[in-house]
Structure formats: C-alpha cells, structure tokens
Image (tube, rainbow, N blue to C red; front, side, top):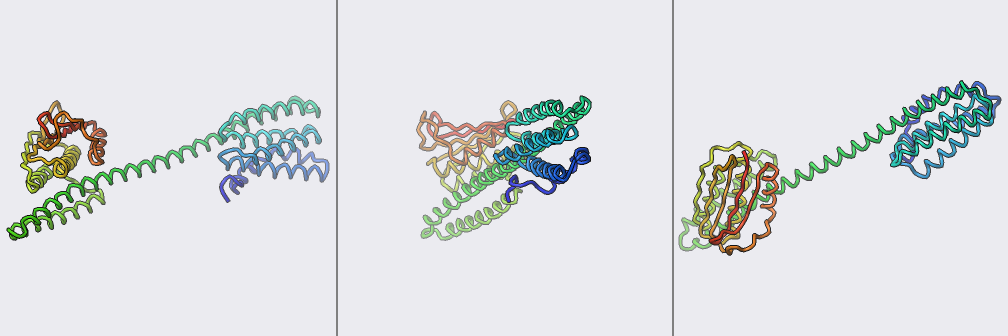
Length: 363
C-alpha cells in the first residue's frame, strides 16, 4: 500500500510510548464503559497521530479521523470529570501531528489554540482546580511544540531528499550532455577526415594505385585511432593535447586540398586550457573542411592580455558582411564550455570574405 494510506508500525509505537499520562484517567475510571471508551480513544489517537507523522500532506481522511479524536476526547472529559481533561492534551498533539507537516501548518496553531480553550472551558465546567488545569495547559503547550518541531524537521528532511534527487538527476543530465558533445566533436572530425580521404582514394585509384593504397592505409589508421579515442572518451580519460590537435588539423586540411598555416606563439598552457582549446580547434577545422569551400585556412594560438586566443580563419565562400550563421550543436557546446571556464567564443565573417572563429580563454 502506498505510503501515507496507513501509518507504519514504527510510527504507531513511537506515538504510543508517549501515552503514559492516560494512567490518571484510567485510574479514575468508574466502570467498564469508561475503560472501554478510554481504550478506544487511545487506539484512535495512536492511529491518527501516527498517520499524520507518516503522511506528507493532509487529506479528507485526516480531517475525519482528527475530528473523531477531538469529539471523543472532549466528550469523555465532560462526561467523566476533571481527571479526564488530560485527553485534550492528546487531542492537541494529534492535531499538530496531522497539520504541522502539511502545506499550511498554520492549522496546527488553530488546533493548539482550540485545545487550550477547550481545556479552560471544560475544566471550569467539571470543577477542575486551577493547578490541575494549568499543569495540563503547560503540558499541552510543551508537547505540541515538540511534536510541531519534529513534524517540521521531517518536512525539511523530505524536501532535502527531493532536492538531492533533483540535483542527482541534473548532474546525470549534464554528464549526458557533456558526453554527447564529446562524441560529436570526436566523431564529427574523424568521419570528415575519413570521408575526405575516401574521396581522394576514389579519384586516384585508377591512375595512381600506390597513392590510393597509401590513402587507404591512412583511412585505416584514422579509423583505429578513432576507436581508441572513443574508448578513452567513454571511460572519461581522454586527454587531447593542443599541439597534437594542431598537427592533426593541418594534415586533415592538406588532405582536403586546403592550404594550411599554423602559427603558435603562446607559452605552454595549463592542461585544462590546452584540452579545451584542442576541442575548439578540432570543431573549427571540421567545419572548415565540411562547409567552407575554402582554399586556405590559417590557425593561430597567441597570448593577449593574459588570455589564450585561438583563431581559425578561412577564405571560403562566405560573403563579406553577411550575418553570422546560427551555430550548430558542436559550436554551441564549445561556447558553453568556454563560458563555463570564463572564456568566450566568437564567430563572424571576414571583411575580405570567408569566416573566422575566435576563442578566448583567460588563464
């Protein structure tokens, strides 16, 4: 059965332990009917209070059960005299247990106020002394405050658990997004190189079999390297250096028939910055090979005002002063990574035609 539909055994035992003040009305019971009524009240009180502790909200069932507890407690106190007004203490505790953990815990305040008023009124009606009524009132206030504090603590713990679950789900979603970006960057570049080299093999296979075989061997090598990189990415240990990536990018551009120039004047970078700019270079070069139609591509890595700056520019068929295109998934992912590290990614057409990508990463 779903939690909240019935109280747990532990909750009922915890509530029942605190029913020792009922010894006084039990000792002053005038007959079997009074004893039976007191037992019925205790069982109903234990069930309702434990149900309140084990339920995150308040339902119609809670209202009905508490109404029965309140009516029975007040009726027994009026019927059997001053020793029975202690039942109103349990009515207050039961109401606080039910209402203090709901969406509107102010209901518990009204329950406490009503119980105190009933104790004064019934105490006067049955001739209870001020000392007896006062001691019950003090016990009611202290017991109700204790139960209310426990209920609020339980509510906060429940909210903390929900928050922790939400944070765990968000962390999993972020990790999936990061992994998808990594695979996109990895496979996009590698498959582009394979496609370019396969086209070269197709063009020269008949007139230069030896060169075609060499290109085919390169395809095999790229494919094997891609398998290794994918395995490393899956296990989270992939470490792509910028120097190796720039060399790989120049080779891929040359194989695609694009003249490449690589200039690096920046000092050796920290590992995190080196890996991040390597991803940027990989994605930028992949886009040049796929989409630019360029004959030349220039790549530079420099230091400017304490920031590493990577620029990839080409002389492709992108018109001067044309609006920048909407970035794809790869560039969006890189932009998010750079912003997370305090950097920025800019893409814009060149005045003389072509396209330029600039990544700035403070060190």
